[in-house]
Length: 315
Image 1 (cartoon, rainbow, N blue to C red):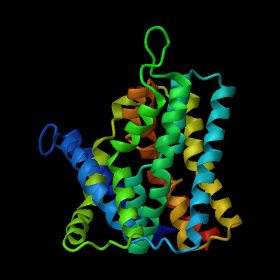
Image 2 (cartoon, one colour; image 1 turned 30 degrees about the vertical axis):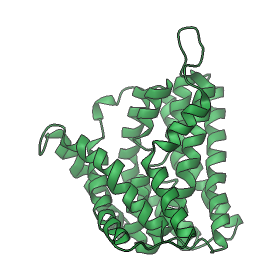
Image 3 (cartoon, rainbow, N blue to C red; image 1 turned 90 degrees about the vertical axis):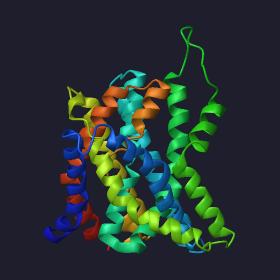
């Protein structure tokens, strides 16, 4: 357990360094917002393209792997919906609970997979991301539009659902890089002379810079009285999601490294990108911002324990 904590600790120390740099406005005001954009639009898509272009899609286990992750997503979503219904939670807050429960910080998943399990773990994490990122984005847009908007003063929907969905897919560089990397891989066109080498170099810079940017995005001032909504969404994120993935891995007889990496998708905090979607579609963005910050802080303690338990029971 102690050695595992030491393996995970560098990932979270980079988050702390990013938070400290942002707090001290180092090296300059607005710098980390620029790094965040660079990571989101260039570095992280490069990493996802590079890894998905290496996936062996002929592996018969991959379909079961997708079922495990999507099954965990479905059951976790039902838990959040039931919790919000029983609490009689307002729709914008309920949708923020849903985002906090089912979204995952892809950057942290890949960083942990690489730190703990090396390149093979990174490839499996990229596979899981290629399944969950498009699925979660489509699911959340549909759910949030049906729950609360966006609408005008008369309650009429201002943007059509197909337009919102196409926008969520077409404008998302992570989804585009996954589709491009996977598509070229399936067509047998990878690696691409010179291009693959260049993208591979960019991908090596992605994880440390992304982790610093995630740390810089933490906003302690957003933490107020978050109440039971935070508790239940965090139980969904840190308990229901990983437990269901673990049980489904057990049911499908997925053991060892694939199971360990799959569990990571349920162990990390929710993604910071959820804040922008909440603002766009009428969710409770400020409350979600507090959820993101608190979950990120909690994950420093919950991730090592959860990884240790997954290795104990799914070896």
